[in-house]
Length: 480
Image (tube, rainbow, N blue to C red; front, side, top):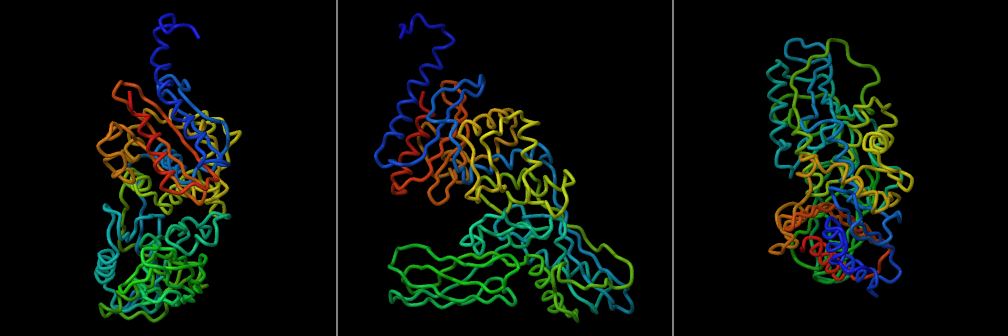
């Protein structure tokens, strides 16, 4: 190698950065704890596109939830920061002497935050139900000679990806996205802990109540401190579920979260209960649109109220800060709606892929995307694809604001706090069984701007050790 003094001055920053980062990458790759693992790492100069350091950057690997960066970024680009999802409350039928001879219909527009228990900018379900009841009363309706119906037809029934594991579907993170989402499409399942190992912790109930849901309890008690290893096995529109695995021994209440089998029906049921509590009788049981009347009631359709979601930017921020699968899947489906994709194909990836290839000029040869959230175990792409994508989005300030910041926000709030990475590292994490990834940007104190992706698949290392290695790599990116 020639002495540094003979190199063009413009190359010096790149070489010095590579000299500081590449040894750290080599140390990860050669660590005996990762023997047999598949590893792809790419670090790119954000301004020039030059590769700073890497290991096997062209190897296709499972990205896990780092894939949400792609879905949220494309959604912001195609739909706009201020895009909102409407939900309409309608009366279908004639109203005579305070009686609606017809149905109350909640028409979903895909809002993933409707009645969310945790989204800061969303309206809570209790408040929404009170508003719905008040609007029905304001229309002079004192009795419903019909049903409350949840209309989820905006997206159709394909709420989950075709290859999501059964072990995920019944749990909150495997909840599908539908035209009418409700309460983050989840319920809380309360259990009573037991102290005897191997005993069955009884089910206390669900919050909210989910009508017709039955849960076969095969759960067992494990050692104290063993954590939540309970799984609900179910499927969309299926009301017979199975509870398996373990929760730790104890004497208190232990809560896990399941996915609502039919969010549209659940929203309709809760509005029916709210109407009855307000003295408005409803003669027929609540249902989702697919289970509604075969013959619509006579009379006009009257819109009683319209609710609008938080902005898409706020939803995208929540998606990446908290890694919410439901929100990412909703953004994928809304992209398809905007592109006039047939409802039966609303969970497909073509619109997003077209934007990546034609709109952002990215190479898709080694890329397979099967969902919007990264939950599918059959998603894969190279680390170099992610850094190329991140570079294509480098001037989108809205997109940058959706990525957690080390020591400051989201899933990175408590990571690398008090280090040189705090406030300078923007990173989305991703994890599945056997897959751990990070991707994002590093804005170094020396003025260097980097895009990076690290993907480790098929590892057997202890999670704490892998976490330590990841932290060392992320910190190294920010050290001048």
